[in-house]
Image (cartoon, rainbow, N blue to C red; front, side, top):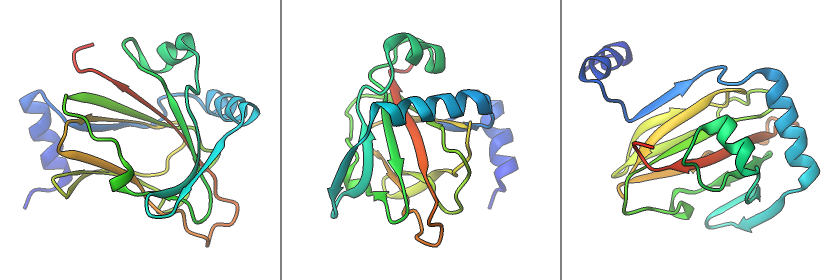
Length: 172
């Protein structure tokens, strides 16, 4: 069995990688400014318990701000806010027939233990993005890849996870 370091070295040699995490992709000041801006706009509650329980904001950023954060060829950016007891199940995830890259930027105020984003290919976990303010998770997706945001434990009553989710086509 290979260690994560060995797998990282192999991915570097092959010149391809399906998932990465960039810690501190944006500063703490930008994290705070984005979170406050989203809160001022206001979230809507999603609560179909067989799919998820969370708050969301569609078209969370204007095109210029989205380009500044995520680069060109980005579609609409969705904001997700999860508190204690919230989650998004994998069967709620929208699957795509074509390849794309999903970018998840954590703009939470603080890390919350266990509040992760999981990506699975054909049911097998291949990428785990922990709660890490300022971090950017980049994942190549196709029709075989699902995503879910894990349950935020009620043991952390002040927990608030805020993530910006954007998608782009590979090669753009």
